[in-house]
Length: 251
Image (cartoon, rainbow, N blue to C red; front, top):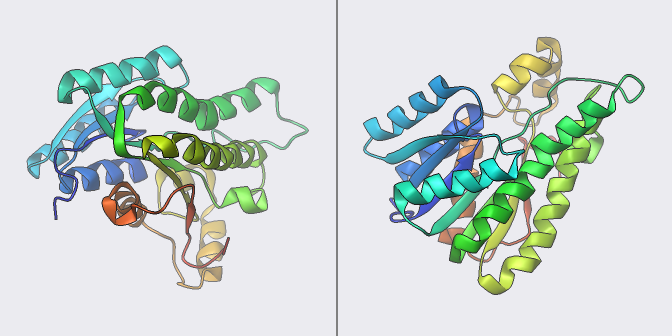
């Protein structure tokens, strides 16, 4: 449909899994996409090459979004590639980083999880807002875990993502006069590297069986939701968190 033609999009954590699919689908709708990555240049280049091979426009930009200087550089490099305006910001970057109970958790780990999942959203958003136009869209990533505290050892991750929800709601009101919409998506069990790394197969099978649709979600399904929220089809949706979990949880 190419409904995002001439739009400039930034996707943090855009090189793999959900971020990769978001990058690809935004580009398929006509957006020029800056694919941010932290340390896996091979995945980032593969995502960019996939977009270009399909006739899209994209560049890979390295950066640690827990550092404000890197967030500012991401914006500057995007502008160098595509021009001054920024229309769409998708804050995907984040992660569990490990499972630790509160008793065994060290302050350093807690701070790292907060930085990756919450501070990064603050930094990139703060850097991008001065260059976003009326009609712009910001989509943040939370998780179903904010509603139930997450699985064993996920309290830091769930807490950080709960912060993203509150940040989203407050920012939606703050940016409304600029006609910039801010929403969040809250995935449940999605078939990604995240769960390949941190969730036991038997747990995944159990959750899939409990889900009314009887399966895990796929990254491209989350990406479709993000594209919708970024588009004018969602022009009156603001400050919302959209659950995408196959019916396992209703907000």
